[in-house]
Length: 132
Image (cartoon, rainbow, N blue to C red; front, side):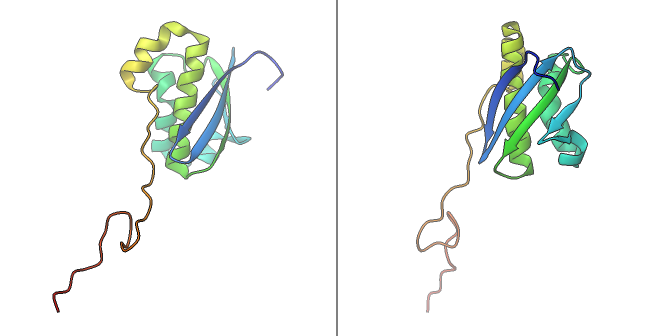
């Protein structure tokens, strides 16, 4: 990747944060933390999930994509990259907004792990009740 013009988008999901850069005129190569997409995300479902905004907007193969992602687990990172790609696509072409909005790619998934409460085993699981 050269120091050419790119479009950037930030995506977040659970505790993962992704900085996505789209380089126009590319061949569709995707690098995540300087590793090929297939190496970083071995599960096909994660690969499919994060490339969905490109499929919906019919822009796959038109950009080279570099991603810096940290925090969270595999699924959270894939979701963060997906949001980052969608936001970067908006900067490329604002007319894609209705298509991306309809697919739900522009909405930040705000679900995060609930904190553990005192006296409980997990966030909501109570210890077993004993009568005697």
